[in-house]
Image (cartoon, rainbow, N blue to C red; front, side, top):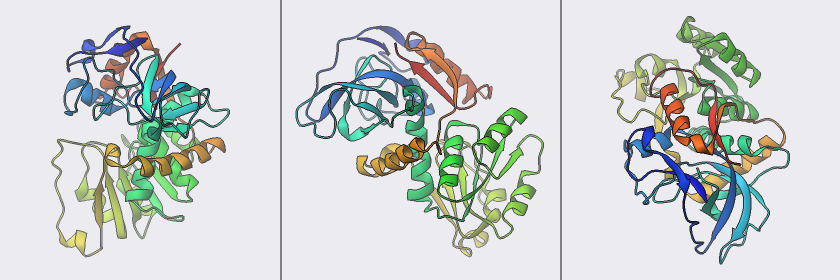
Length: 332
């Protein structure tokens, strides 16, 4: 099969493209003919060596995929040849990735794709959708009628948080950096959208939720606890899912514990297959009713996987802000 791969961690240029042997099927695994593989920052961290993970030699990058089951291994019970599937959690913890023609995936990490939703869409809903769902509902315990703020609403996770929170009946405020990105956030359902470059974000949030925000979903790497925590309501929750090296300043403890506030961190890959399946079930349901869709900012062919990694790295870690939504590798 044709695949993107690397033998050693490093910059995007370590990624090669060529022919690799098909991986043999083990019990419970299926072979998926990949049609699309979406990129995520975790793919960059693993490839660069910033996040230490057990790697194969060579290692195929990529967490997310969508495609068609072409072969099933012994003991597979949920899937059959010909099923359209999507999933995530590949390319980490010793598993091979998805930037290839034929990916071998345990059926526990795959879900049936709803009719009428394209493969690039389903691949792009995978990691960011499950991440947003786990943060909002598992960690954040979001309820209908509550108020949510998510930073960077036009990003991969941000677009998912807006849509999932609205589908659950919450009120949502967010920020974006340009009129075009603000318009997208409004289109996705955000009740309040502010420009973080020019608007009084803190004042806007106070007016949006006079009694305080119930949930703050932080997608940026440098959380501002000093200004954010006072904006939370009694029993407010602050979700952290980025910023591995950040050392933020914390306000006085008196302003924190006396209002029963919580700071909740999480990483998607720590959650079991069963808990992630519960998130996937909602994603499938809301995608089927068109309450949830992925925003694809740029697509690359599989042959240009290294360029795709560099583009995403420049747009996120490099701060170019040249991306709205997801980067996708499309596989012929």
